Image 1 (tube, rainbow, N blue to C red):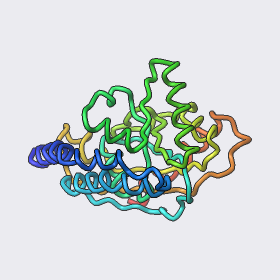
Image 2 (cartoon, helix red, strand yellow):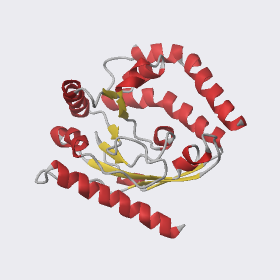
Image 3 (tube, rainbow, N blue to C red):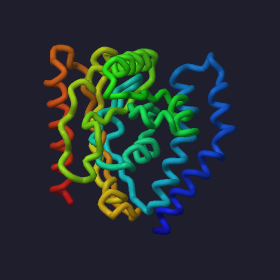
Length: 241
């Protein structure tokens, strides 16, 4: 219970504390390159996320980060728990935005930071809005920003990984950028499996080799291929443990 309260107080307090920095990020020199701007903006969410994970008492290990190419990419990840985003923000060095459900846009301060980070808000119930969001994501990728997508669409909470939705891969295909699969293991042990209490966990993040040539594959084939790569890596980690 103490970790949960501490985590909540830190998250709330740091968001308020970050308001001057948020204003500063919005006024960054427009002549900076995309990579420079993203790196500067990334410093605050990265610090916030790393402290959150420290409060949980968890140990985070990242393997294979050398597989991430230069330039914009789409990170495709399995979605195990609520702490997936803090783990990725805190421990993957390449800055990124991510696809989020539309409801988060109503949350003060958090949504403002997400907009600065070039996140995309998606309403899956509204087809027209979803199409606009996909176009927005493609535009961001073409401008040089990277994006994280959880193609399961919802958290597995440590259970069986859900089927990857093929439409999630349209962003990468339309933008023509590399796909970087990432397997995340252990985040559900922090929260979802504990009756919504926070407990320390061993978390392993594995960055798999980038997929750079997939033009000849349709979206369903591509989704299946990437899902299998992540499933195989998770199975390998399970055997090793």
